[in-house]
Image (cartoon, rainbow, N blue to C red; front, side, top):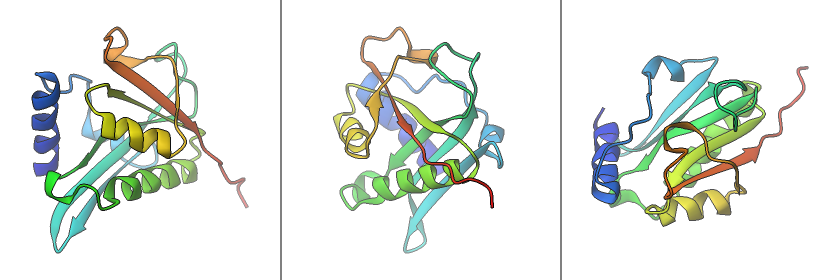
Length: 150
């Protein structure tokens, strides 16, 4: 997918390497995951997904977590609210799937991402995953409101 290639190129530009977090596309299949692509005039311009995580996988994770991965908006379409829309849909679908918290990892070389997440109510959490020991890594979490089944 073009957007995934673009996000990896973005990481190479900002950090000197691609995201090394192991990601299997099957992890984003319902009901334990979700992936969205946003289009403008038939062109894919934004994407993001979440995958279920559980306690025991990592000391900072808990049962019911949904980890956001591959959040990206094409450079020509930034500043138009697409990232906030993708993030909102990821939160909505994670809550609908019974996930209780959204977690994510980003880095200090992505201040615009940090601003997005903090502005959307995310708070710092202990580091997890492949970048746990990287000084530039930052992890965030946000509790979700899960509706009780009818």
